[in-house]
Image (cartoon, one colour):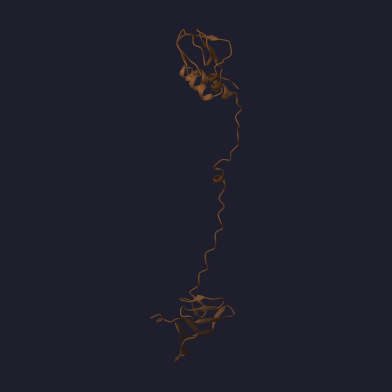
Length: 201
């Protein structure tokens, strides 16, 4: 470590030995204790300083820096600081890159299959307006439950459950049943179950 070398100076008339950054060949000199010695009134000495203030301030880096700049010796102080910095071993730490997280590949969730679409017709049931309530069970907006049963590959009307009024009307080819908003009508090869055209009106 490079130390700042201070020089000793004393008035020619005698007295305390002071410390200063450098004893100039000409011009005034400023001591660490703040005294300014006029040109020609001082001399450099090899003895150790005995000024208590100078000795105390010689351990204070800020006081020494101030004294250097007061005597326009700032360039010398800068040179010493640079030498000191070069002699130090830099303490290096490997820090994780702030981009490390962003550089990771993005894992996208597997695409979900589209929700199953309800066919327009399931066997004898026209599904428009109905909501599925289980396998072969459908519910209308007014709460009519229609049960379908599978015969081979075809779904056929099996049962209708409704707590409200049910109207059965004899028509050509059989009986039409109206329960709530659901109509069950005979067809050529069985029945047709659908939401009535006037439902909700």
